[in-house]
Image 1 (cartoon, rainbow, N blue to C red):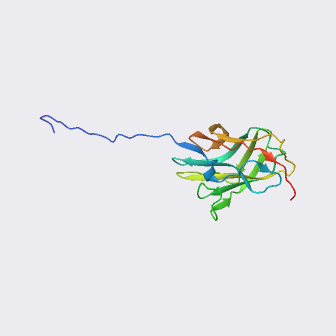
Image 2 (image 1 turned 30 degrees about the horizontal axis):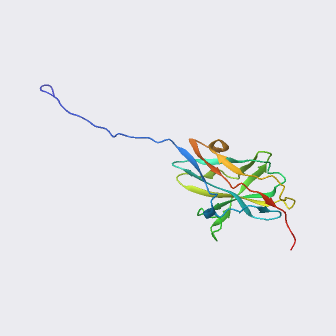
Image 3 (image 1 turned 90 degrees about the vertical axis):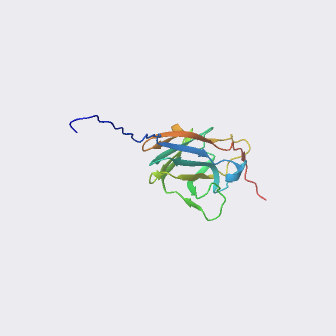
Length: 177
């Protein structure tokens, strides 16, 4: 147009963005059916710590370090990580063992290295740490409690939030009946 008045407006879309975030949740209540305290020496397959991992986008988790209130060495002898379809460890038929490269206890933590990064993209994974209780534990064995915070796991991108705190376990000796 080479003469006259030109008038127009254009309105774009008002986009909002959210931070890519991995979130930890605690699965250590009675409804989650983790092991009860005290833990008895020699008991196998005890779910001592439950947690969920979820994300609002595309994220994977490569390493987890469950913090321990006391040294787990000498209290537990075998470890595994189990994923549950629901948040209840005791539900029959919906638990599967997660392939791990290693689960390594040290004086302050239990480090879990999955064989493949855990894909938590737009989903929730319900996970339980299982142990075999050392047969030498007794009532004088110091209590132990696990916890997991944002600083204790590694994601491929984005931020992390949340915490999970486990049961404060005491121990009982294996007794012959």
